[in-house]
Each structure stands twice: as C-alpha cells, then as structure tokens.
Length: 387
Image (cartoon, rainbow, N blue to C red; front, side, top):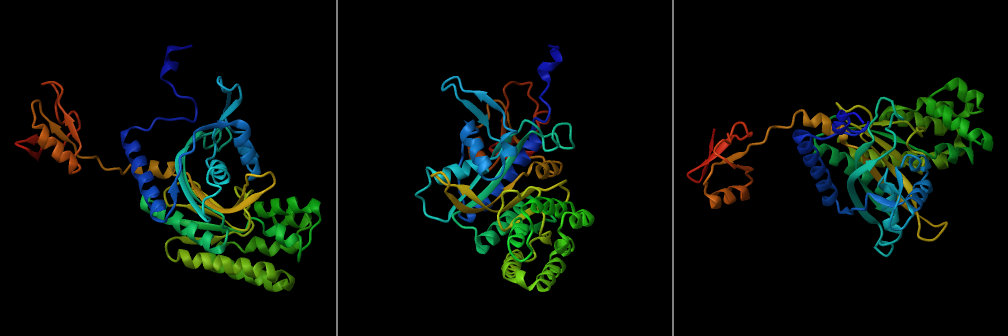
C-alpha cells in the first residue's frame, strides 16, 4: 500500500470541515425543531440491523433495489449477516409494527441520521458519486388521507424554509393513476401496463401509442404549473366520463393539498411521474429549492409491513436529503465570534459569559495568540472586549 493511501477516503465519502459541520448542525436542528413543533416524536434506530430483516422491509415497500445497495458483513457475535442501512424509512416501519404497535394512531415519528450505500445515486462513476448522506424526515403512520398528505407537504416545506432553503417548489404526482385507470375506465392488458407506465414516465408520445396507450396521451400534457396542469387533468377526466369517479377524487385531493401549501412554495404537477415513487400509493411529491441541484426530498402515501405476515398499515411521510442544501448554505455560514481567555483569567466570569452564549478559547501557554486561534474578543476585567 502506498503511504499516501493512509490520508485518502474511499470514493463517495468526505469530511465536513468546521464551517460545513456548523451549517449541517444548524440546518438539522432547525428542521428537527419544526418536526417536533408539529408533534413528530424523534426516534433513533441503529445504523446496523440484521440484513434479512432490513432487506425484507425494503422489499416490502418496493425498494428491493435499495437492499442491493447495502453494505453487508458477518456479525462475529451471532454469525448472522448484518447490513448498514441505506434508508431509514423501513426502520421506522419496523418500529411502528413492533415496539410501537400498541401506540395510538396516527403515530407521528421523525428521524435524522446518516445512510450509506455501496454506490452513489449516479450508480458509481456517475454525476453523483456520494455514498454517505444525511437523511431526515417524518412519518405519519396509520393514516394516508388527504389531510395527512397535506400536513406532510406543508411540514416538509416549513422544515426546508427554516433550514435556509429559498425558492422551494413541489412537484405532485399520482403514482398509481395508470393502475387505477387501466383496471377500470381505460382498460389495458396486463402485458401493456408496464410499457404504458414507462412511456408516460419517459414522455414519449410515439412509444406510448405503440404500447397501446393512445387513450392516455392527454396525460402527457397535464403537466407543468399546478393551476394549468390540474385544469388539463380535469379536461381529460371530462373526456372519459367513466373515469370521473376515479379522477374527481384525485383532483379534489390535489386541490386541497395545494390550498394547504398556499404561497409557501411553487407547485407543479406531473400526474404520471413514477421514477422514485415505485412504492407510493395514490399520492407522491418531490421537493426542490433554488441553488440546489436535483431533488432535496420526496414523500407520499404508502403502506408499511405489519407485524403479521401479509398484513400492512397505511402511512404518509417524506424523506429529505439536505446535504446539497447544506453545502450551499455553508459557503455563507458566518464566522462565529470567540472569546479568548488569557492565562490566569477569571474562571467565574468566563463561565458566566459561556452561559450567555459566548464561545471561549482558553490559552494553554504564553505563546497562544488570540487572533491566530480565531478569536474576536478577549476577556479583560471580567468583560468581553473586541480585539
């Protein structure tokens, strides 16, 4: 091994230096304070679980691809395979189905912690090689109503805004719309459904027609700013009267959620977006912010596995991945004031100033220089004086 390897980190991992770490701490605290204020109780599941348990719950919510991205190793104590979590959401499902099974519903939980994957979002060598990320979010378990969805969207926006995000936008989707329509008013053969979903997702009109989804073409154009897109979705519903009993409820739900958001964020609609929403049921949403590349979070309605085989429970939630936001914020993170404590300083006065919020840096030798140590003030005669 080359001696320089001792100073390197694996691909996709990085250190956070003081300014970035300060921004991360502040942003995380701000977001968690919002979740706490809305009644979401924080839990802290472990970084490592038995691989079989964690993977089965990920597969249970449609994330078997996530299970394949987990680091695995053998536990020397139990000789069973363990895994590092790549997603915290399944862990909350386990808690809800086991230790919190008897808790009153709806059960509001929140979390913040690191997740680790074998490959970055870019698939290794892609545009985003990051393999360790902060995941922060909230889950409302036992309810997937319109009111629950509206609450989670509003709370997610508020949390991002308190962290410092600006220009927040939210893109709504209806992940199971094709399933609902194809089993009723706009029937498709079983072999066609996946192809129609795929071409709607790809926004390929020609391929959609070739796949037998010509009736679904208007959905390609029911996208964009919320007000105009929802109007086009209503027009689509009107052109297929048999679909109105399905679409009317969805459209009313989207309008109710949009009303709850108000002017807190820009709203868009893409009713057939499926990428990243493979396990959501009737509603999903993606969060964006100005100055942050890509999505900063996703959420929606889904089902968690119950304690008994084959059982499930409805839930609504979101996950934020705020590292890109934190990176943007860290560039503007202000330098903090620090109070230099000379040798022989008044320790009682220093303690009192710390209680008032001062950061202190104590001299350890006569050679310690306050400015070199990043101090802005010095303790003199019991008071903090600027340097």
